[in-house]
Image (cartoon, rainbow, N blue to C red):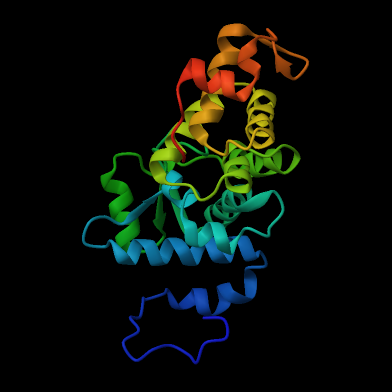
Length: 236
């Protein structure tokens, strides 16, 4: 829309709860919370016939929201977690399912009558919502050390829901310092591919790693030799 002549004639309109354009607009101070809330409202409206929720991993990988929050502290991923946590704390969004704040099983609902009804049908109910304090802690931790989603966005590109699943699994398997160092090594060798980074982490798991470097200084440390041994890696 920047620099455009306005909305075209065939623009579709999305219903927005009126308080979000009234008293809530005065109360919400965080750009992150406002953008996350609006994006969830838009995504839910687009799929009302198929479901009334948005998957958290899907929201984390959403390219529109990623671009909208790219300039926030900690990157788009951390900003998304903070925005969702603030919206859940305020009560404009409901959250249920999963086992932690970034679980792909987590579902977000608009706190309106259809959303509450859909949430009750999941069998989780309000008691299964995440602790807002835990979600805020995830965002705060990401400010001090970039999480795997932020590292991917900053060094490789946009996330997809399927790739977000792989990244989450890797984050649960490997120490944060290993993940950060693996991204650095991939960038240094100009192999900006998650497949390449995943192989680095696999190699360190097998061979060991110390002092931020691979445990065994073998020929595999050379990118050409590494590709010969482990196979040419696909981009993405």
